[in-house]
Length: 467
Image 1: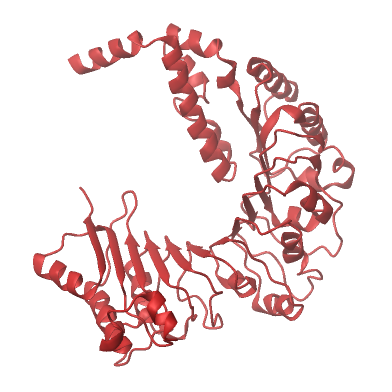
Image 2 (image 1 turned 90 degrees about the vertical axis):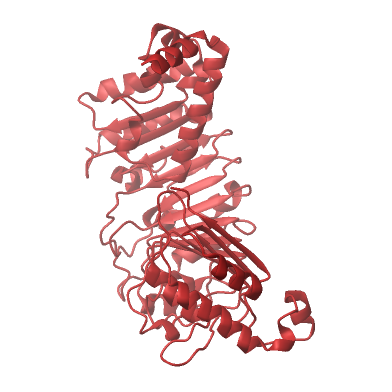
């Protein structure tokens, strides 16, 4: 009780300028999280049943006075529709824009129902258009009316401060097999755009010239496909629209995130026959690895997130890259592991993934399986196993040791002291030993085991997870 009283007293003694700085840093963190996620209605509320900064303003008079006098704290506007009153929605939006006093605004508008009356859509779009020059980020979710031809011209204007644009449909997009091209959806002039997040419907309606004009400075492009398999079957007439749109981006995209794309293999084969590929410096795929079949061989990093590692034996190889990362992946059976993709990179990182996932990867790295060993990833010399947050790292300890021993034996005693540069210089084509093993968040390690790893691996780190 005394500690609580001292804490409250200490907070009350803080100068208003210090409180304002703390609130500003908190708001920046919230906005940064917004940029990384798809807008959902529940994201509006931060704490206490109220959005920021209303939550802070309700604590005490001092905080309320600080927030009321700081227009920069009113720059995150999060509107959830439908509201009880359409007029009230626009009134609330206008009120908070006025409180922002001309500061750049981060605007999110989410339709929490599956359908919104079409007559409500132009009201919202016209409101956005009036203030487009003040927006630093714009996120629109579940507005089906955006795809209606007569509304497409509404989202237009010069947006010199707009850095993040996100237009996505619901989680379940359903079947969409239209043979007609939708009219170009965006007619915004946004030369400072850094983050673009769109769903597959928007991707099909993007004007390639718009991409060339506005994505010169882009840092991240996310393409989402919802949670349901889109109907990209034989009746789908334009399977190449997505890669063509991505290839229209000027320069190479620094980070491309493909979320939930589940093209059937016949569609992927058709895209490959047309010679189309997609690529970026860093490619992140979530939910399905099939799309890697149309990723080019010039990536630096490939991240596979929330996927089954042994997904389909028809995936024969991964695109060339320096680094391969597995994040929250899982495995089911090792029976198909020796048939899964080959890869020629040198660094593998496994984060928050289950034991079967690691077993499959260890087999690919050369751990003995069914009385034999064969590494499909011979150039790997760096392996990192990481547990973030509350995740408990459980992996097959004996299989890890067997894989390291197997690779050392395959490399040959005469090559164990050489580094990658020296092995490249002699044209070494065989399996390379693991030279770097970093484990962050593992269980405790016995001294004898630690000594074994230090003897077998040149750069060895094993950090135990603190409980």
